[in-house]
Image (tube, rainbow, N blue to C red; front, side, top):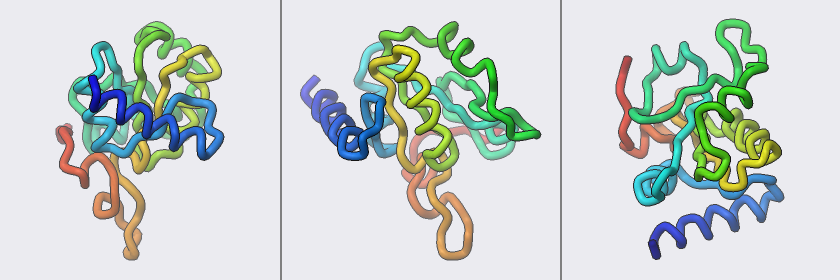
Length: 150
């Protein structure tokens, strides 16, 4: 449990330094390690169904869209689904494409009583490189973490 506590303390410090309302901010590699080490931890992928189908999925993740495809509007049922599928006492790790939607989802979850909500920095695809392409600068896939193509 030493390594888990170390990672969670680091995540907490990052979130506090930014005045984020959720429990922590983790890099993809840290999040994967925490997910494996923490009993009952849940990874919630908040990308759209199109992203899961066309870009790739994280095996074992709970998939709840933050925004709906194709219109991009906010999913009005996000918190209802989260409450049905994920225990409020669980350590919850939120993932999106690049860290923005997952930040919003972790914030919403924290405000709804999820005291161990964390954002995964960089997201699934990471930031764009100088050529405007993702998957080369940060992100879950670039880190070589488990994912599958649909």
